Length: 155
Image 1 (tube, rainbow, N blue to C red):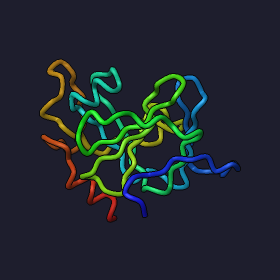
Image 2 (spheres, helix red, strand yellow):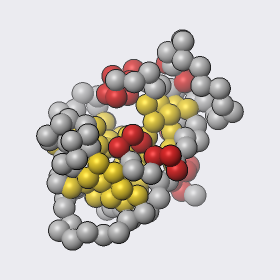
Image 3 (cartoon, rainbow, N blue to C red):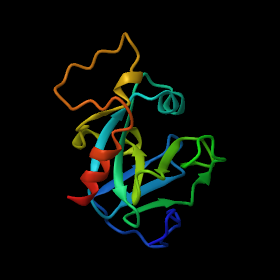
Image 4 (cartoon, rainbow, N blue to C red):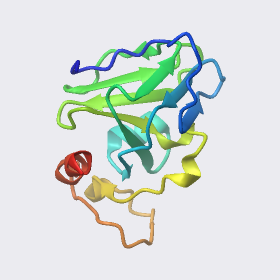
């Protein structure tokens, strides 16, 4: 299995359980499985990426996600983090993190079934914006939450 996903078009439509698209509709996502985990992220990088006070991402196993046409791979801003965007409208489509091996994270807002994948934890809770109060009983990792996220992959 490659360490970095190679996003290509299959050429034929596979009926996946999870679908999505970018803002302009030119780039689509399909997954052959349900997400492994969905998490909130409060870190500054994800807030800047999404333009929102908190981000949410669903993780898929490498090899179970297709983005078509192949999205634009952005120049790395953070070491160990790779991000892909729609080449037409710039929507964030996917990201991989060296410390979360074999996961591809997709912003939940691009998924057609976003309502079905509620987050199960908060990552980087110590970086949350002070006026944002999400009142839930989900676990809150002060940093990346990598232990819990990697454990979800081995279940």
